[in-house]
Amino acid sequence: AEWRILTMHDIRIRLVTYSPDYLADHWCNKGHIIFCVEGSMETELEDGSKHVLNKGQLYTVGDNSAAHRSYSAKGCTLFIVD
Image (cartoon, rainbow, N blue to C red):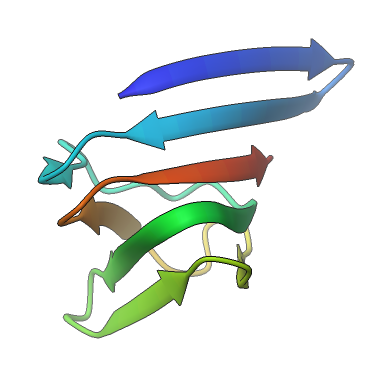
C-alpha cells in the first residue's frame, strides 16, 4: 500500500493506493469516511458481512461501531478522512 497523509489538528486526510490482492492485517475500530477514486475494494465486518465499494462511491463507518478490514482484488485508490 502507498499512503499520502495530511494531518490537521485531530483530522487525518489520506490518499491511499492498495496494490492488487491487498488485505488489511488487522481489524480496525476507527471511524472513516472513504471515497473510492479508482478501482474497487471490499470491506469485511467482524460479523462476516461484506460490502463492495466501487469507483465513485462513498462509505462511512463510525468510531467503535463496526470492526472492519479492507481487501482489494485488483487494487484501488481511496480518499480517506478520519
